[in-house]
Length: 183
Length: 181
Image (cartoon, rainbow over all chains, first blue to last red; front, side, top):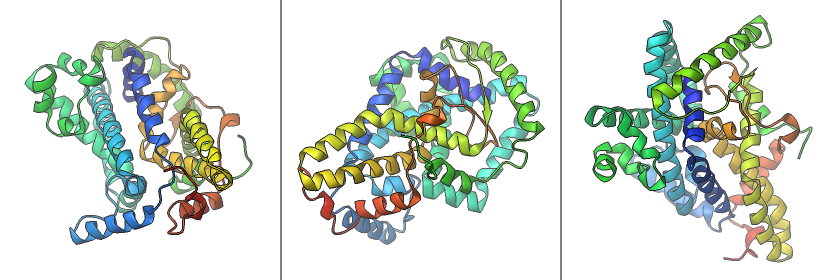
């Protein structure tokens, strides 16, 4: 827990521009929160499309994602990509350093995972959008491990050079694209 | 804005439940342990990440509900300037806009609350620049203090949340028709 959170602290205090960038995304997202005419119709359409396509009515973005406007969803993608990187980075550091220093690290990791798999917890996660956070952990972790394997551990810090070096959501899913662009 | 009404945090806290050993010897023990671990980890993280970790972080162990409240409060504080700008725009649009403005505040906080619930990390990371403190992971029984004091908590009644949410998504949307497009 301390490892994970202090890694976040290092990310936001050790990378000077990251705080302002994050705040700019948050501000952008909130400023787009103006009430939207016809939102209910749009949401009903979306629900119908999801049902017809056999997709879950509420996806991993939860209720917020369902009601967000297309503009908000575009900003949400940037937030999600950033969070995936930060969470993945924090998670890998926690697991790796934890394995060196903590005898109970494996048990802690196992308990956390089993809690997330509980049915009632899973439903709550989906409704609130917490499921997206869990996916952020996983996608971000995959991204960080791929970059380390294909390049080096130090290469991950290239993402912290500036906002344009951050991986996009598509690049989080396909880390090779990010390596081609940035490394 | 301080309120005696139930806050979002308390509401979500009820859903999250209470850690069985909250407010017992275990919390005190965990608090002492976290202080020690935080100092220890402060030396490890820069080495492991190659990133600087300035200052000397400290930690305070708190319960689930307080953690959620602090998350919401921190996020509301972050978004306060944007909320004010949105309200100003609505008020400028005329009487109907003025009526909508108060609702907008509620909606903003409602969305903030949902966003906050959706992105626990937003506070885990952003609180660190408000203070030299850190917080703990979402799923653990207790967590470390975030930055906002209880006097800074922004709250709204559950009823306001429901009515605000319904209004935002109501087919009539009468209150919002006067808004600039």
